[in-house]
Length: 224
Ligand code: MN
Image 1 (tube, helix red, strand yellow):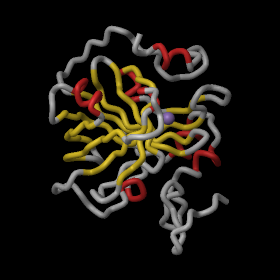
Image 2: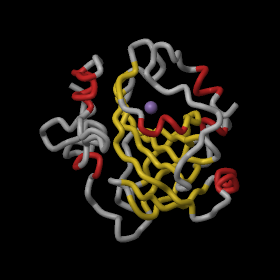
Image 3: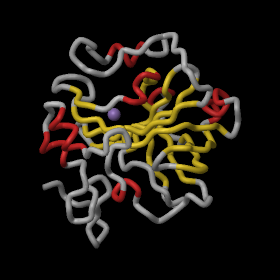
């Protein structure tokens, strides 16, 4: 039911992604948190929070920022199965989301307000992350305006001010997988994917991340 849209988009004989079970038994009572860095048609970070037996999911084009003054666009996408939370690998060409997926961060999360359904309705979720890269207080706020489909709504992901807030560019300084320490190009190589394309999502050796790189004048860097 909740995973219908997820399953409709994918051919499970071809993609290595999990189909997901409808009745997930978990050993731990903590809610799963995960971020997958995904070099698909565009680079983005899939931000996932377990709720009600699925992973609520948002695609964050620029990835999270530890700076509380920075709001990152987060487009809600279809719910994913719990089993997706440790997926890392290559989605074959021609499949939905074709490209390279890295498990960029993982851990647990805790909502400030236990009634997450009410927070989702309201369009404001305050929570604490206990990940390997992201920690402390965060907020997701739904924007007004475009997107009446609740599955396609637009949110902002913002770091709340606390001891974990920082000016450090976490996507640039910690670009590797928390599961395997690999970069996107390594994952593509190991999985028979497009290595050069995947490497466009890795730091480019000039101290810049293609996802957030800007020239000194503030204009977007052109892809080479
Ligand atoms: Mn994605």
